[in-house]
Length: 169
Image 1 (cartoon, one colour):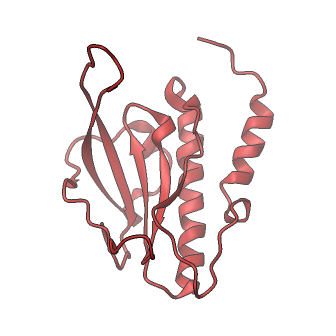
Image 2: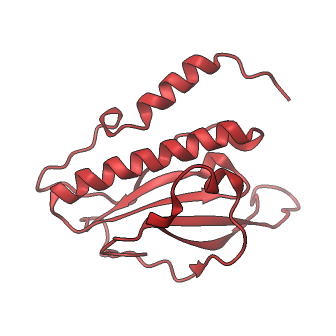
């Protein structure tokens, strides 16, 4: 595995990105969010290292909490959730969705969501106090359509919402 150079700088930047002030979001009365999201581990550095994955998942929970506080004072109805991929840390993200002029798709409903019954991965159980959150999951079908002979695979994505949510997925 390739050595991870510049770890200190990388984690200093992650510390900054986990705060709402690092993202230029508009909470004025006429603003809206159409599945706005941010991937804090876009390059998937957490794929091979549990400690790095834990740090990113903790940062997502921190950002989600700050977003929730800001959205509550904003006063508009919203949906807020985290998606964590079992296979690819680069897919992990926090999402915000509201009424928007692009499509009439609020509240968004993900029909494939099911209650999580199996054991949760360590990067999730070690990262947050999960009693405050509702965790469900769904499967996503993956394949590279540009390959000559595409191989189909599946990924399980965890959807994490606060228990006190008003517009669940």
